[in-house]
Length: 427
Image 1 (spheres, rainbow, N blue to C red):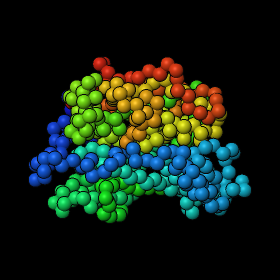
Image 2 (image 1 turned 90 degrees about the vertical axis):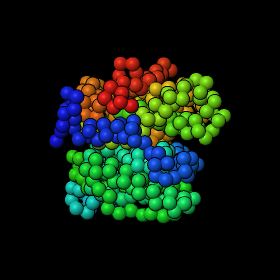
Image 3 (image 1 turned 60 degrees about the horizontal axis):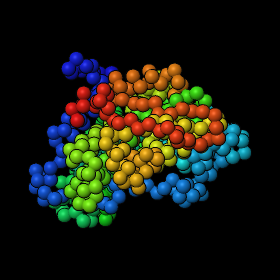
Image 4 (image 1 turned 180 degrees about the vertical axis):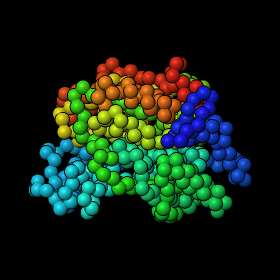
């Protein structure tokens, strides 16, 4: 792997890309005036929902999609509703299928589908995702979207994407000039993030819509050893989270400063404007960072299962994952790493459900089940590669496939005084 040296640090390509994102956020955020647009132009004004906050609630979604759960008999076992459904089967009758698969198929309810292909020993891992603008910089919005799409295959331990499709909708409320400036910047951000991930965009669909819409489909053809199935958590494992929570409330609070005087006044009563702007920058930095290294290290440190934390929030995604385990376990959550000052803002605006794990995250981190004796090494190596911390937030204990919220929940402010993202990123 190629690397370079800066300030005495050896930087991997992923670390250099993260540093580039940090410099861009600090010095080069989108200024509509520089592009000849009105000073009041805001990309987030072209939607009423933000990022993964547009998701249909998990229980409603699974009910809507319940008729999709049954895979064809020769496509292997399906994990229905994201829940463990007994012994692994190949086909609905328990007989070995024509696909001769060594892995169970995964369909509706988890991060990606995993489908045995006609070619022996090969599988298709595929996911699709799209949402609406949650930041006002169109270039970064493209990068965040691409990182979010790829995160679903990373959660399966798959680190190489063979193809990306892009889904775009330009707003019918755009003027022609706004359209011709904003959409190419979104596309460029998506394309640049794909290149950082070692893949490329080779098609998609573009339409006109009332709201700007951005998304994509990621596909990878893999062998069984490339995949970490989300089903083997063991009693005694710990739960590691690779990005802080609080992105949704950070982007909303930032927008309120200029668009919602009533809410802005409530925020300013507890947190200075600059702290909100800083939280917004940190949220953007977190959302543009790929989970690729976190996925690579899952193999090196013997991860037993993982998911990414996005639209259903920490609690919802953890619940999806724990229901899918072969072993009768509970996930017990003890710690919540949250972008600095967002926990106190969330107490004023409890509707986000941040402290209950229900707040949507966009391009959030991976939640990884690791052997207790491997977790510290995983966290240390991820920090070396990405320059950012990860946290042990809980434990895997004997139980009945539930998420248990500790009565002594601890909020970890990110960054803390001695663990500051600004040390390298300058944010």
